[in-house]
Structure formats: C-alpha cells, structure tokens
Length: 305
Image (cartoon, rainbow, N blue to C red; front, side, top):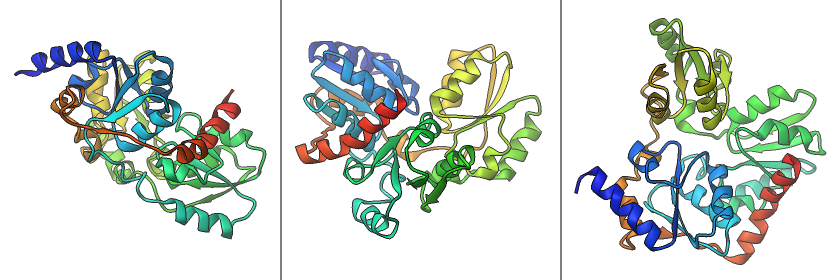
C-alpha cells in the first residue's frame, strides 16, 4: 500500500466505525490530511467533546489523549502509538507537587496543559500556552506556583510583574535546547525574516523574537502577516505545514534541533492500525481521577470566559 491507499482506507474505516480523528499540529502532513480536526492539544479536546462520534482517536501524545478523555468521559479515546509520551509531562508527579504545596502554603498551583491527568488532580488551575497570561492575571491570588515549564512560567511572570511566581526547573527539552547562537545563525542566513518562537523557549531566545505565541498563534501570525519570510522557532514540522498553507511565502527552521521524537513516533500506519482495531491503546481513567483533574480545567474555562 502507498500513502494515498492507507489514507483512503483510514477515511473509509473512520466513517464505518464512527471515529473522529484528532491530529496535533506537530504530526506528519499525511496524518493531518485524514484528521477531522487539527491544532493545539486543548483545542482538539474541546472539538472532540462537541462531536457526536462515540470513538475518538488522538494522534499526538499521551497527555493529550488523557485531556480528551477528561472532557469526553463517556467516549472511548484511543492513542495510536502507546509509546508516544511527553518528556515535559513526565517530569513531575503528583507526590512532588503535593510536597511543594506543603512548603508553599497559600500559593495557587497553575498547571500547564502539558501535564498528566494524575498531576492535574492536585492542581488549582490549568492553562494553555495561549491562555496562560490571561488566566494567571485573573487568578484572585498574587502568589502562583507555575508548573512544569519554567520557560513558559518566566514568560507569563514577565507579563504580570505585580504577582509573585514560583517556578520549578522543568519544561520542554526540545524548545529549551535552542540558544542565542542558533538565533544569530538563523538571522544571519535570513536577515529579512521575522523570528516567531514558542514561549517554551528560554527567555533569552524569546527576547530576540518578533512574535511569541502558541503553535496555532505562530501559524496564524505567519498566515495573516503581510511579511513574506519567517524563521519558525517551534517543532520543525510547523515550517513544513506553513509551506503548504502559504506557498508564496518563505519559512525557515530556527534550528534542526527542534525535532520532537515523541511527536514523530506516530506514523500513518499506526493510525491505520488503530482505526482498524489492530493497534493503539484505549485511554482509561477512573472516575475519581476524572472528577479531580477536571476541576483545574473547569477553573481555566471559568476564568477564560
């Protein structure tokens, strides 16, 4: 079978089996083409909660599938590649944060969406990279413990200097590996290009950027901008996707180091095997975890509205 044959079979099977396919923006182009919804992780979970399909396949990583299950507990949620994890989400566990809460009484615990469902059960508010500043500003507390990404936390703290932030040394190792030397090299090669970066990059890299935002924010900025050249400072797949969306513009990766092995681990064949019932893993969460983890997501929705 070639790529188009597999894609056609996936499309046939998802209709036959009442499956809605979600694909994170970092997934391969051939996977995005057969998905019903694409975008950032939380947006995809909301999309899934609104459709009538009883079966959801999240082509991304485990914490994304867990979030989808939290918002759609009555649906069956599947992860095509069971080994697709997230280095950031696995850095901290519930026991560590419970200990930190004891040492920092009076702090509101803000959890980035890139965390496990189990960790969310002991957090107060959840945020996405696009909503973090707004949500943290609206929290009725001047003391915030932000986990797990210290770079995103530093970016948020800089926008809200009137509040006190405690950060933990954690985050995305892919975005964090980018340095100012990478920026200098990219700008020297492409002097007319604007630099667009994700706030999971270090503060020093963000300070060099023309735009800082979520994955969807970066894509929308580049698509709608009157500029024609961009250096993309997030997972390398976004440069490729933007090339397809805007063939009249030029997109360059900030560095080849921006490759996420977890996002690249899911293949089109993994997705095919999952919808065919020959692979993947169903995400199962007990009712207590769902109830407790939903609280911080519901609080994000309340503050965001």
